[in-house]
Length: 255
Image 1 (cartoon, rainbow, N blue to C red):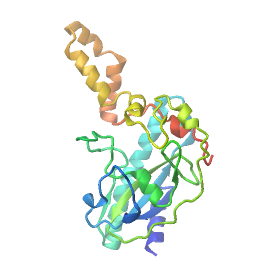
Image 2: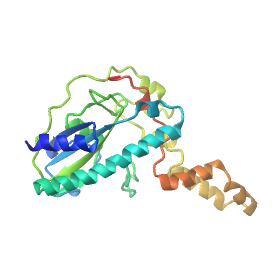
Image 3: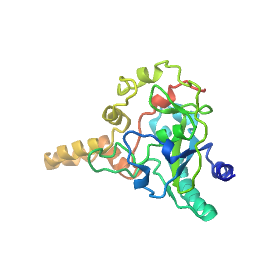
Image 4: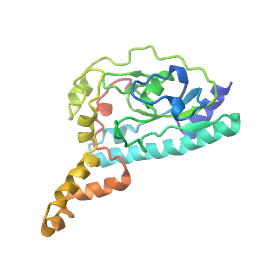
């Protein structure tokens, strides 16, 4: 069958789990219609990649981020290979969803809402359920898994949904969130999360350069050696540089 052939190829590429969702079963309240990305879309192929436990648990944020960059690089490479293979093998158009950036930086969302919600795609593809932290809990890897997706014109039925209650509502994610972004059940307060998880993001950059614009030449010279500027510079070519992985690291589900 097509699904099992595709699943086998995805696992051979290096994905840890592969699932399928019919386009009509993908329900995301904030993202645009899938047809605005691929007009002929009929289904999604969703691939999941486990996080490396030691890196995720490391108190050194650079170690955790190095692992995240590795996962993202593998996902981007495999998205291209899977989309190309689907078109060559089945003669159906395919388009990969971004695993992270690029994002739509225009209003009203300014980079906070992706074109495809990979969390909702994973749930629709039978790869997990939402936990109290609003992340997907996979039956095998718990919260320590990242998802990506390829939209395709092939008509593929959804895999059976996960029906087990994988979240025990222990509250460790809420208590462990340094940004206090999970206080309201069912909602992650994006800006609170971003201020802590991405301290060298666009907001920090705007604030730093505004301050620099009003500084004296001597003050500006000193600011160029400020660790904050050096971290902003590094983030400018790394991309979205995360400093916090606590909601994933403290979740005990399936461990």
